[in-house]
Length: 524
Image 1: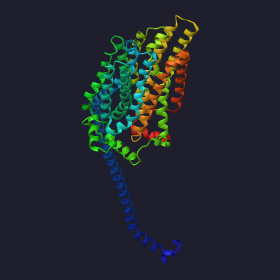
Image 2: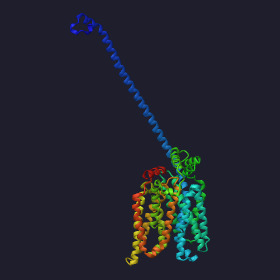
Image 3: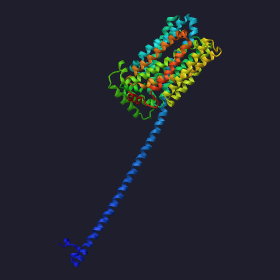
Image 4: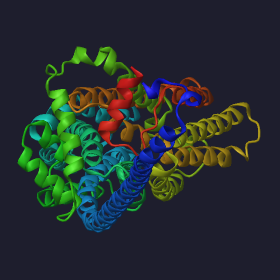
């Protein structure tokens, strides 16, 4: 009851006694509060210390992980440096097929005078001999993808080299037009197969940061083969020129047993053990291939669930973009007139009043260093940039050449005509060698998925050789119709190529083949 009374009504003694009795209690409570505050403070300090220790341990673990990663990176760099030897060796063996391609294409220009004189062919018969190479190449293109998918990349190159040897022997032993054409068709089949399988093999074995340059070596050695045929053909007879074509076939056959098969092809046919062994050999014994191998296996498994690729699948929405890019580049490559100039270089120079032998020799000299420059720039400047610069340059070269023939027909600046033709054709070859020559083959080997690569690659290669046949066979008729107009048409095609590349062609540098497929799927 006392507690319920107001303080003013409580007796003073009771109040003092109550206060005295409550004093120890308040002191005890203050001690508990102080202890609690102290304990809380200590707890907070302990938690902070624990957090600091945990953070320190986390930093230590992260530092350890970074150090380990740096160690692995350094080890990987060393392994990559060591493994580059096998990648380069494999590429060197494969591009023997590219050199063979070049000698087959370049053979007809320096051999024309000798064959016409010795065998007694007319100009129209020699035109058939020169262009029939593309007939065999079309057959080779049709079968190249299926052969490469069934037999493997190495066995397909081996088969092509054997066919090429028989083709060169047929030409060497020829006594008439029929034997010459038979040998030329066999060489065409050889080049049709090699033109597909070589860039595909190189792109499948190369690291992503080197793939463009290594794949561009395909065109470099095509140009080297052409140049060898031009330069050596100017000094020896057409029969002995056959040896220039036999040598790369022999090197290809000798070198193939010493290089690994394409790891992506092995993965695609389910040979996982051989796939890992091949990839390890290409990347180095100490290299960690787990990440790359997993990416390849996952991608292969994702496409193997799909039905077997058919021709009509090329026109499926998800494949159409890649088909348009691949086929379009090869169409414009041919419409630019490269095979017309390649087969009839000597004739073009002579028609413009310039020495045919000197002209072909100059082309042979400049092609190799310019193509090498393009290969070095492939993984730096990118595919699109080289294509845009190259197609602009071929436009200028063809326009200058057409202008020289126009001046000749009109009787204007007659002393300038040979020089203008020389500069125009040299400008064309310089521009073509840096971009429109190598890049379409590189992009063709990159943009198609592993399950569509055989069919789509065969289609692109077939289109290339059909275009080559049409242009090379019709070139003499076009020149009879209007020499200047022929080159103006080629220059117009190069101008349209610039627009095509700017609008549709994707950039593929610095990405794995699997990453390229993912990006193309996103576009469609």
